[in-house]
Length: 580
Image 1 (cartoon, rainbow, N blue to C red):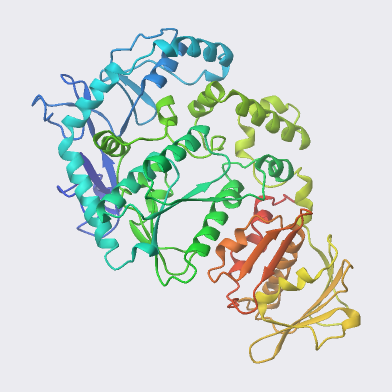
Image 2 (image 1 turned 90 degrees about the vertical axis):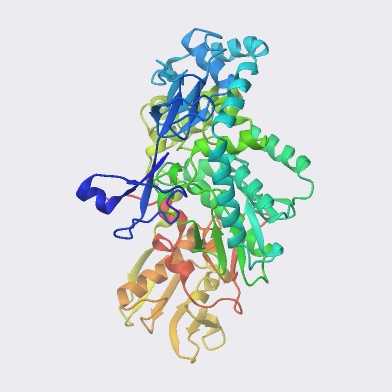
């Protein structure tokens, strides 16, 4: 059962708003119109030993007891690992086991006294060895019985959510051409369900799917993607992957991603997916994207709308059919439809994304150390190596206690020094600044000033390396003076209204944004992903250098690539240095 709590009214009354049979379709408070957040109730049938959406079991007619707010199945593979950790192999072989909110395990509706608090102290090699010895004796016979019972007991719930989602998809796509849409496919359970819902609702298996391969996916994800392609030969599944960057190499340069700064998402996911989308739908007037995101997954996602315009790509509409579904609903759909899914879930992973994500739970890390020994040991060594490089007194403890996950900024990271832009005001000319760059001047430097206006390389004195920046009227906005190969650059601000600036100080900051980018650019593609007009191109050369170019014709001078990130550069934000 779902209740919707209005945060405005809750402050006054503390009472939730009961939903209608259609799950409070608008998810809005009928009194004040504010967003009503979903609060679910899952019941347990003692007789049938399965979780229920409704309080009364449709199989036996008995009332269930309240159990938790959401729930997922515990497959035999995860059950065996739990039993080994507890020292009780196969103790719950014939029982109905589920995992509820707060990572609580339930056996036949009763809380299992199992804690993940001491996982770091366990001998992973012994557990792995024991698991390998026993997995051949493991069986899913009893699990399948409970799975079938779960499906039958919640048939009404399945019918309701499937019909509603199908109607929503058809309504959202009624004016769209099949060639103007795609499904964002991660290989996880939510995008798997979304894929099935979309192809069924539209009766069009040829809808394009885009898989964002971060290069850090679970090996089980790649196996599932391979199976999906074979099982869905009519569905084009395209891959977006950053072939130019290596995760471990970048970790050694800028440090591993943390919970605060997950630069890996920008470098290995967002940028390349946006690039793939633009290349596929370059001439399209409207792009319809089906996402498998759900509000219940995180606090940030709870703010998402079910249908919205993309903040990054012009004319892209994002539709999220399962945004209000619970884990309960996702698994009910998969089991009812008999759909194949990523086998990482069978091992106990609640979510599948990057296997080494700093946001992964302690249980996920433990499972990886058991099932992915080589990768886990390599990543651990990399983390220790990084801790040593930034001067941690006890690198092993820093890594084991998760210090790397809370890291902020680039203190101790050598590459972060490139974020420093040194300058002195010119004493001979008003509004002029002399910069001492860390990288020799090249033609690429001037490219970075296209978002400010139109480059004029003929008006200035070529012997001094003068380049002017004009507006559409031909008025001079900026004068750049620096010889190719030199590290000295003089910038004269003629008009302070640069890239949306309103005063000299802000205009000078805009200039520093581009100079910072020139010194730090490592081809993360963050700038490219925020350019809505496909005017910006970032390519890595054979020698490892990054070529940053902006199309004179396509650039609209919106300055989004200048103002979107702190100091103009995403990596500058990641590697911010605390100054003393």
